[in-house]
Image 1: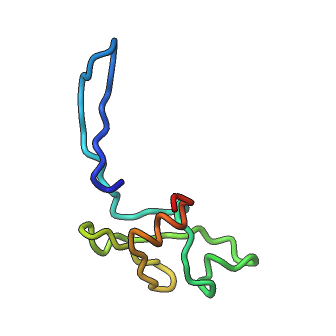
Image 2: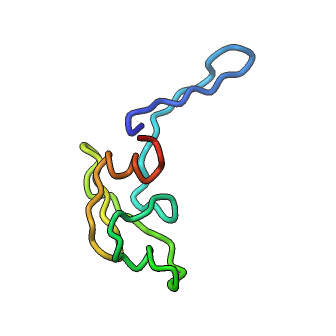
Length: 81
């Protein structure tokens, strides 16, 4: 979740908290939804790579084909929805 908070707990007490931050570049984690993208071709061993276009709302762009992915596309690629 783009707005998640992680709590570090030791001995049943919260010792620290921090917000999850989406990195500027995401590589090899998300599959491009464009079936013609070079990262989806079996004969091309290229890992997917996305750059953040917008954090609110979350939007990523594929570095190879330029396809924009919104939060729903990202969740679908990760098998969340």
